[in-house]
Length: 160
Image 1 (cartoon, helix red, strand yellow):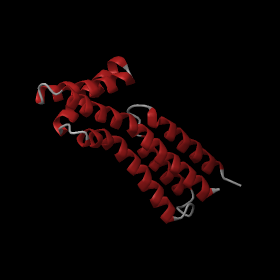
Image 2 (cartoon, one colour):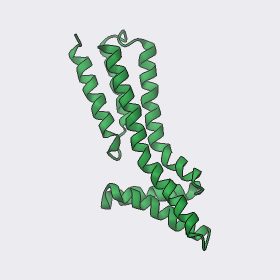
Image 3 (tube, rainbow, N blue to C red):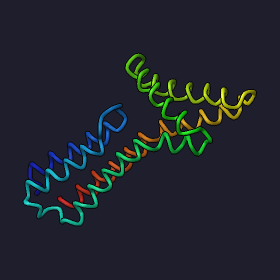
């Protein structure tokens, strides 16, 4: 039978997985803290130290994926890092004004306009770069959710 702490930790890990789609929630870090917190309550005897470290590393990897996937995807599409950073800043600013759609429009629009400015007369190139950046921003939440879902399942298997 699972202890109440294990059940609470599993519920929290599911919440952090769902919060992957909420802007500005450090879901991976919160999942890592949840796993370490549970380990602390058991005197680090459950789950094993190896499992605990693996779950923490995957949780932190999920945070890194969230932070870097938009820039990586946009770079693969051909946009400059400077353009992507400016697009991200504009997207974050619009997030506060318009909501989540503002992030997508801000990143995509900024990358599109900057690419048009860099390569005058090449709207297809600008559109491709913009599309890559937007796909990266959207895919990052899904990638983080998949990784954190794996952490939740792995934790549940380890402690139940």
